[in-house]
Image (cartoon, rainbow, N blue to C red):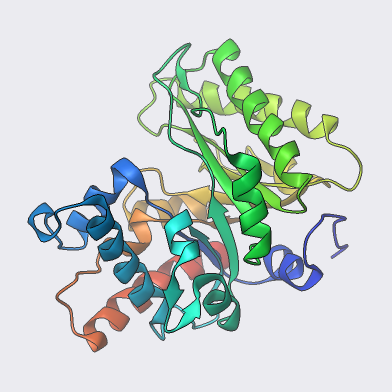
Length: 301
């Protein structure tokens, strides 16, 4: 395989481009945190402030990262929320704890979504992005992730989503980080297949505008038509295409992922759904290990 000319640490880049495995999404934040804690078996009466809530979600993520199953070699990357990046896992800074386990760290940088317009939800402004990126570089992160949502096959809306994503991607690349561009197509969209096709066209247009030596990663909804995104998988300016689970169960997401060559998973809910706070360590490791094995097999199939 010819190594792509992307920025970033060469060893970490090779791990993402050539490694067998998938990327874990541990980046729930803000409004999604209570739901993530509830799914983990922690009800809202367990905290009285945002700080206490985020401490609980950090403890959950720390337990996941410290699990022997998580460090099995089947996970090649992990996406973190800013507070997780700033915290410690087993006494080490979280990014270093991941690297010690052979896992490449990424940072979620978006601040949530705007209200729907033209069938899409753009990202809210990120006024402090430069400072956040500087901190990410200082802490040894390899890349970033940012999410938009597409609900309808509206050409103007999808074009604006992709334009915004790549505008920020250039800002991220300028800091020497690899951006994961995530324009999610809702699996509930009545126009999902048409939206996939418009998205593919718009992404290819933006990739052509990237300078030589620049590349991105793409985090996309598994397409309705298998292998529709093959031109992105094979594109010289795409380091890796990863798939979100998007509301599919783990079984459904893995089944759909297997139909798409060259795309690996970057699952969140489908990875963590079976984990509960009251499990003992053996139960926890076994449940996480089962999920990892299933997602790994679908990613390398």
